Image 1 (cartoon, chains in turn blue, red):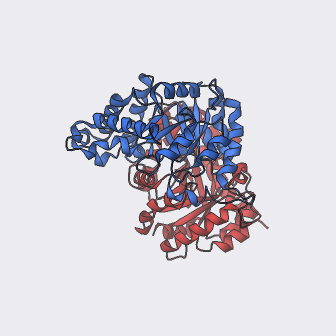
Image 2 (cartoon, helix red, strand yellow; image 1 turned 90 degrees about the vertical axis):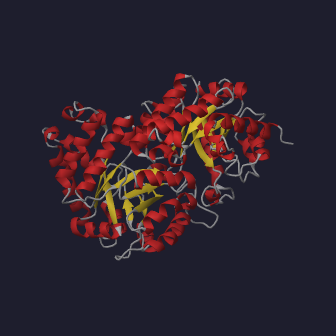
Image 3 (cartoon, one colour; image 1 turned 90 degrees about the horizontal axis):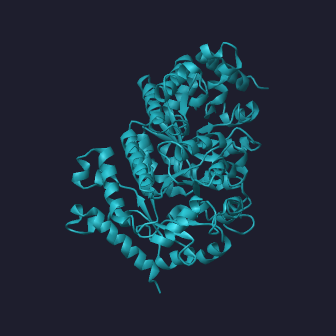
Length: 284
Length: 284
């Protein structure tokens, strides 16, 4: 199962997920002059080539490609194809969520077409029938999903944290149901191919969430640019094997902190991955 | 403002929104043999050409294009371009929802790039900071959004209807805040460019919602295939000027009900639009 493969990658290379969210307009000139498709792709390729032995999985955020229309989406396609060719794992960060007949079409696009990745992210707002059309792909063993539970942005408090009639925040209502749905897709290492997104920020309850959803693998965004702290993130990781920690800007834009950065985008991305691992591992 | 233009279209042509959600694999042979891009586009074109004097706005659901990768998205692009060329209004049914930096990129893609439409749909799950990046486009007057409030699928009860600490369903928490945010973008006819999606099914509270959110224009899905009833829908419409009623499959697949349907896709779509108007208008 793909979730076992991800677990093994984490065991082998560590818990880092690199978010491939490049803003074309802000890229170094040498990429911009290639145009949108090649510029975005070559930038991603440099990051991937320089970090792949240290990284469990890559997560292109599709908005950064959709922003430029079809040329941008061509770069997305080329990026996921490049990852697949090297047997590197990918999460399409698409956060789709829609009624069943529509969800089937998103599943086709992001699990079967040339835009397909190994995992995708989903938004549960419309209910669990908006998640179900993806489950046959989990059943097959080839694919996995991460459903938004508790995100890392300030606005997470507006809806996700709202206290329900039963006195609990909404995310527990959702998490309980997702954990239950996920039981049907648990792999050899004890984690389900139905994962959850839990933000590395505002995470006073990280220990509680980790203990509550024992069979759930976490995608943890918010480290770095969004303010997620090493301590909180460690609490989610279950002895460093129960999740992956995403960083996007902190890694792919690290080159901006150095005078010779534009010449060494990959090098500085690698440095940022190493620093991130050390920060989280060595936290006391 | 674009919301005024939509209001005027409703006054002129009626409240129908046609969902352009064609499943390529199920199209009549004469479209399939054109391939994905041309087949999807020509099918949409036939629907549009046959109905445009009776329809306020068209709503392509992007999942039905993403399903086929770049070729599908090319058909989406051609469809929205064709609508724009004839000054027909469009809603990109994309239901995106993400953190601020990502939402800015979605806004760029769906309000500025070749994929741009007049309106888009948004998912509020991650909080109101996920809606804010779209507001400058509303401020400009050129664009509008419809944010998911209460959808028409069975799963809407799982999260949207959950009773909060204050005894009210979640959708009121969200609706109150959205109505307030929308006050800054009210057009000449009294409706805000920040609209909401309220399903035409399970709508015992349709009258209450309509009265509560007086300045909000509604996108009402669920008529037809999803079971939305004329009576409930009338309650949302505010004397037929406060919203648009979407039907997708009921219109674009009506041809399937007739022996000569495949030869007259547009004709039968038009018949379905006429029947839908009559059903909702004449309901006693």
